[in-house]
Amino acid sequence: MTFFENGRGANMLVKEIVEQLGLVIFSGEQMLDKQVTGGVISDILSDVMAQAQKGAIWVTNQTHENVLAIVFFKSLAGVILPGGLQLDEPAAEKAIEKKLPVFLSQLSAFEIVGRLYELGIGKTL
Image 1 (tube, rainbow, N blue to C red):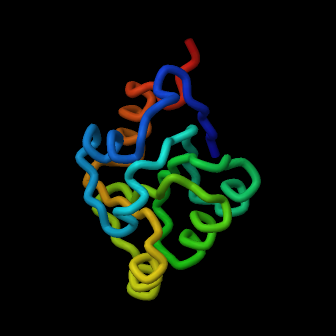
Image 2 (spheres, rainbow, N blue to C red):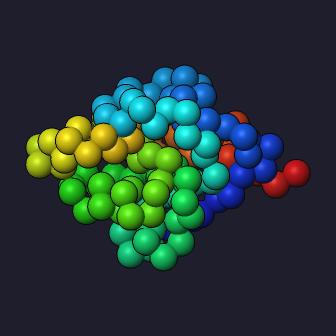
C-alpha cells in the first residue's frame, strides 16, 4: 500500500481530478468541491483503514460494500475504480443511497496514480 500526501496539488478539488483524469462520476456528485489531501492505492482494506487520511482519494480494484464503509468512516474524498471495474450490485445501490463519491475509469490503476502524481498529488517540492 502506498499513501501519498499532496505537494503542489495541495489545493486540488475532486472535480479537478475528475476533469483531468476523465473519470466517470458514478455517485457522490455533491462531493466534487471537496479538497483532496492526498491519496492511497491498495486493495488491502486494513491498510487503507490504518493509513489513509481524511480527504484522500483512493484507487482500488475492490468493488464490494466494504470499500464504501471505508470511504464513509475515513471521510475520503472519493474512491476510483480502475480498468473499467464497476461496483457490485449491492455496493452500487449503497453508494447511490448514501451519496458516496465513487468514480470509474478505463485507465489502469498504475496510469491513474501516475497521472495523480503528475497533478501534484503526492509530490513534495
